[in-house]
Image 1 (tube, rainbow, N blue to C red):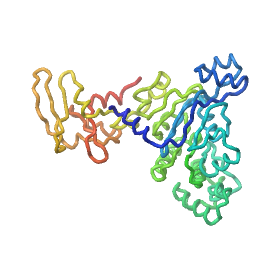
Image 2: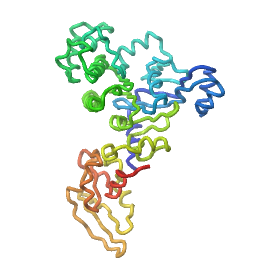
Image 3: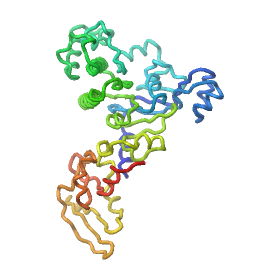
Image 4: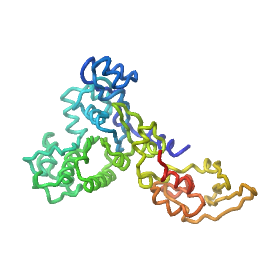
Length: 387
């Protein structure tokens, strides 16, 4: 089993919190017929000609697992923000379903939808959407106030969250006193205040300058490590998607063209569009050792043109490297230096010092167990490859 298949198996065992099935959003013309044609695989231009309808989202089917950051990305006009707004019904889908737990959000009542927005589904907007006449702390606890939470309790929750996002001491300030990055921290704290099951973030960092944007990306990853929220994140920036996403759905012309882990998109792009999007991705920073390793059994079956390395693991767990010269067919056992070991979560850039030796790189899991191996040739080729 390869590394990508292993990730797929792990994902299949996780709880699905949000399930989007065959969702379409059509504007104008014969919307019902346009949706039918979209489900049949017709493209935007063809449907526009036949139905005088614009297809914003066409036959989107996605599962979002509890506790993951799921990124939807694509160019402007790809349908990613429309799809997000169909989830919490800021935009009503033309057809399809959005199952959130046991409920189909496309058919719940307006009253139930309001309850879910106040308690289960929060949203962070690109342009902050703060209330200018309210203080920072009152912005953060606004959703709690709408839910009827007592002032002392909601202020306590808001103060704790402001501390978590680095804004302790700014409780009494107003939005006009804040920088863009600080405003977005307030928006993030406000969304977290109701302890939602899922957080929808629509181009949340796009309005920030590059330095502040990077800080907010790191801040989001830090908070995710602490809070383990389910986050659906929209972006048009491939570097941001690869940095943040546990999985990424790539959209083009209203359709999802590929969905997978960052390594899936980089190493096995579904088509030329995805390949071009990921062509300049920083592979040394984005990919991990587990993305290029082979399980020991498969590694031992791979051959080099001049020599063959294999990994020998005895019943006691002792490991050695066997080298066979293909010209003489002689085999010798090599001792394994600890410097040849790498964690499965090490970034490829961290492995570059190991490329000084032709010996295999042994990959271990969190417990220190060897789970696979790779070669310096694979390492260097992966980092330098351009589709």
